[in-house]
Length: 566
Image 1 (tube, rainbow, N blue to C red):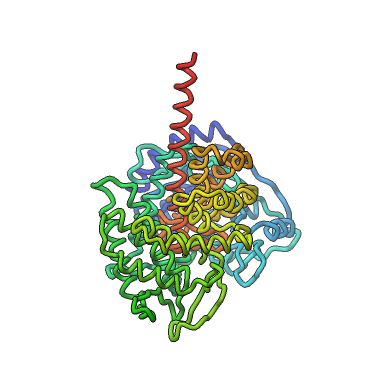
Image 2: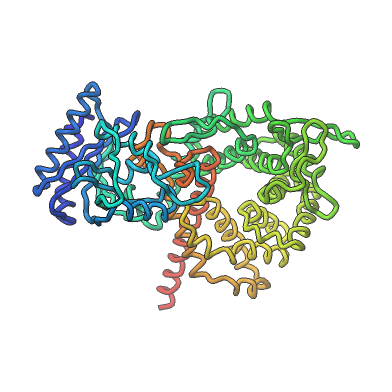
């Protein structure tokens, strides 16, 4: 659509909402993007909102014409609704006490001659210094110069400590090609910059997961290899690769695929198949054992990782059940034998072997590997009912219980515990599952970063708790659960994760918006979008969607029961 067409549709909504949230004078920013390159932003200040709109829109039109008459597909209008003046020294001190990329205000200089919205500043990493170990922000003059040149054609001014700046918040409306009507952006703080969303809508979260799954499908090339990751502020491709994350991504994609009907998800399904074929050819290494059987391992740069074997089985088992195929069972059994060779007599595991000679490289690498290994064995047990898989999993849990392994609060352990208790519903395993989650609820609730694995952890625990409710002998264990806070924590986690999604109205300010739309980011790591980052969001949102459906159905059933009783 042309700028004029989008502006004609957006202007009435701008005026309507400005009258609800007026400011004097009107300080409006209008942003436009074709989603192939970074948004162009122009702003204006006037006592009249109509005049401010026209001035900013005319300036934007001139800028688009200078780029060859660029036709935008999204148009967004922000206006200042609150502001606060301070010195430059005070402002920098505030930035240095805020988590990096968590500064959620715009700034204006020289009485709004120069002004930048929060989205522009963060998309240029103006307050992110990767050379510093500290998690707080810092001012990067070189990036501020780049941001200022993009907007105003000049470097960011040199400011003295005593110079005055104005920090502001905005309300916004936007429209995108294909939308029936404009949407509003009313969020503040951590919800700043993205659209208002419905509460408790299971289909909404399922839709986001499907969009994310299709994003991953686009990252999977014709051979089945993924574009591993992207730093969207400058569109830099992450150059490395990781076999474990290759297969864990296929697990989450399979999770998304399972939500489609028979006629849906064809593109996603083809990408999953390509991904498995590539991964198996590229990473699987076989070894003949003394008893003549074949063990298999996932090799990655000369290393054989326990977790890689586990998560590859998880992914293959899920896909095999969805496709109703036995094609991968021999490989999964060989991978399980690889896990067996890495398990010690006390039930613990060696984490990493040298691929060259199968000697121990690392006794311990990361706590994720143990949960992934047991999760994989239990998912294969679900298919084959091989007692050796169950026995190895129980031995592992004996070690986990004896060593208080739950203190790692690991999402893969939560998955594994839920699986094990389906087949061995013993008190000690349920206790372990509760310990792996309940003491961590406050952290899950309070943590400001999006940390999507926390939602996976609590949702796997929720599934286990639902089964415990049907078991009278577990009633005393359930008394440990503060149900109000449990629900509060998981809802807060899911809502926070919405801010890690690359909504179009957020993506438009980055270097190549179309490459990140539908993806999910890690904000405090320079908005990184890596396949495993996306993966954890998808699995968490699918489980959360199921949770919302379940809770809604229970509420309806309770309401019907009360009506009948009356």
